[in-house]
Image (tube, rainbow, N blue to C red; front, side, top):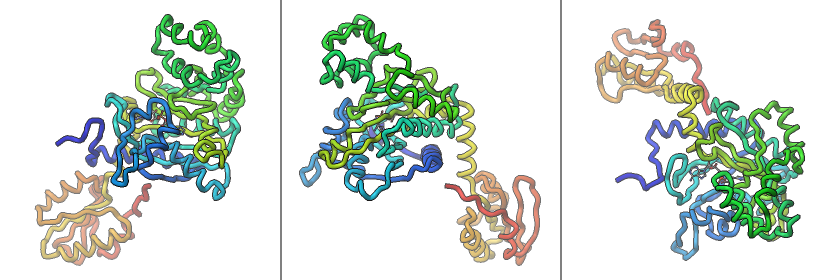
Length: 418
Ligand code: HAM
């Protein structure tokens, strides 16, 4: 029996790698003053049909529950977040800076970088219209990837705005066909010129006009200059590339949008997001009207990139080694001292030390071997020397005899990890 296609088992090694990603996401989000929230795993199907739009609706894991409700496993967070904020908007001081790291489900064709289940870091700012918020969000996305040991040589943030394309269509009297038009622009990188010209015809737009729009300098975009200036002050412009071909697949985006890719553009997007200033109003039937922006970053493409980038893989492996290791191992050299050994194990664990010991009798040499394998920094041997115990620092092989009650003072305090 294997897991279903696109689903992953997380044995301890994979679980630790996933936790490294989640712990790093949380650490950087908190550095930026974001607070964590969460929502239900199962939502009404209508939430996504009405609010996500695009390809996503065809990828839902949906079914009818026993109460005959049409429901779906969550494929993304944004509609849930909009609903949650709209429901209790008055309780929160604006702007809200919220993040979460949930697991999502999408019925996609499993392939490199895509599964039917994945974790996604979401960071959103609600209640702020300024380009300063756009820049803060992009800076968070960049610093998150930097925290994994990735640099501007490894990834690029491609920034664009739907507002420019909206104005472009409006000038041509085709504003109502925005969604279809954006679907054509979204595929521009993969389309042949003749094919593209044909697809643009129904919008009364020539390929030449689109090319002109694509070459317009970002400083002339509505918020381009302010965004660039802010990111320049943070020293982050080397990560940025303005690129109007990026329009995003989800229906709710209204303004600036961005996607992050590996420099070689050989992987799928690492992250994507943008402004969705109308979604809260849509979801609350006009009751709550708040501007919003955010992004999502998945664990699958990121995990592949960490694997393929030596500096990032080394950083992860150092974290894994530090987190997997126990602090110490109790060697039970005489079985008739097992009671004293258990008392000591209990006392050390109560003090916060990560301690292991043999559950059944084993040769002393074997026990030392186990201690090394578990990454213990020290061992405490209980045997002939009782009422003294022999404490050994494994790295230096230095040993000392001491009474058990002095042990805690002798051992370094346990490391607190997230
Ligand atoms: P999205 O572009 O659908 O945006 O997903 C964002 C990221 O999640 C992708 O760039 C990718 O890394 C990851 N991802 C998406 N689908 C899969 C999959 N099937 N397997 C593995 N990874 C995947 C959103 O979801 C928006 N709700 C983000 C957002 C938040 N916008 C505003 N706030």
